[in-house]
Image: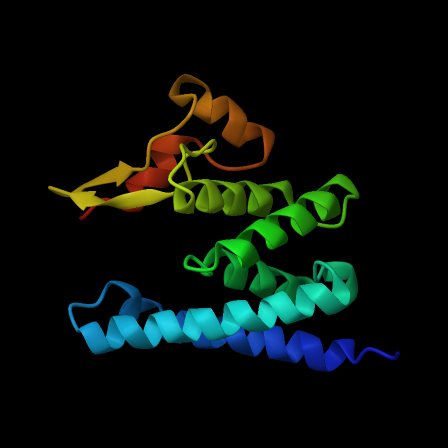
Length: 168
């Protein structure tokens, strides 16, 4: 079977662009907007599941940097599709081990999946919300080691990261 990877790359980047355009709906006060966001991310998650079944993890080597990052973003936002997130995590872990995906992105996906499973995150990448102008991260398994673990995968120190979520 001949794969049309150019079309796949375009499809992934278009899904990520739609995700970016709609991201504000995720936390909207309007229930219809939140529902539209959930439907969009579910549709994208379903399609990513099909892509992973056919191609494995869509690495930069296969689809280019932009489309590979798009696949990661789609997996990140498949919050109500743990099967898709877990499969993406497994395939991405294999790709990182082979040097074909970024450890930084894997760390974000790992934390996102752990939080969605109701478990403590490792790298402190997931923020639960902002209260009184201060970011409230989801609990971490080893908070005393967070910056060390983050450095190992190329993520900025925790305090710098959460400062971006603070109300100005």
